[in-house]
Image (cartoon, rainbow, N blue to C red; front, side, top):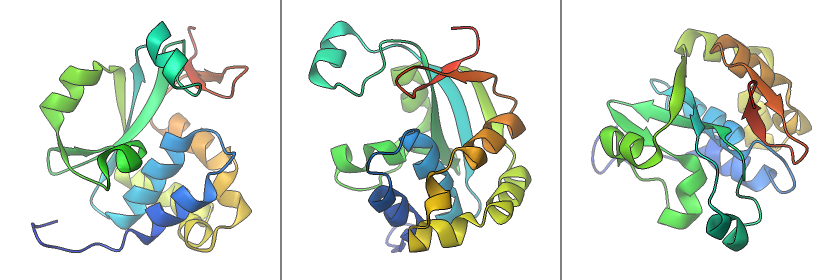
Length: 164
C-alpha cells in the first residue's frame, strides 16, 4: 500500500454495513479488512477493561478485560473499529498502538490459516453481498482457534479471555 493508492475496501464496507446488531465487531471488521489487504495479518490480544467513565459514556465498552482483533501490514496497525472515530481507515504506528492499548497475550493468525478459513466460510462473498454467514460466529471461532486464543463469551456477547 503506497501513499496515494486508493483502495476500495469493499469487504470492510460490507462488514460495517452488515454488523448492525451483531457481536464481535472487531473480529468481523478485521477479517473483512484482511480480505481487502491480501498481505495483512490479523492479530488478537487482551485489552484492559473500560474505566467506569468509559462505560458510562459508551454502553458497549467492556467492564472486563476483552479479546480484541486488529490488522497489521508493513509494521503498521489498521484498527477497523476506529473507522468512524478517525473518519476513515488510517495506519497507526505499531509502537504507538501497542503503547496506548497495552495488549496482553498477543497472538497472530497466520495468513495461510486465515486464507483457509476465509475460503471455507466463503467470507469474501458473504461480506460483499451481506450474506448471513458473515455474522455467524463459526468463522470467528475458527480464527481464534487457529491463532491459539483461549476464550469464552460473556453474558453481553463480549469475547473474554478464558481465565476471566
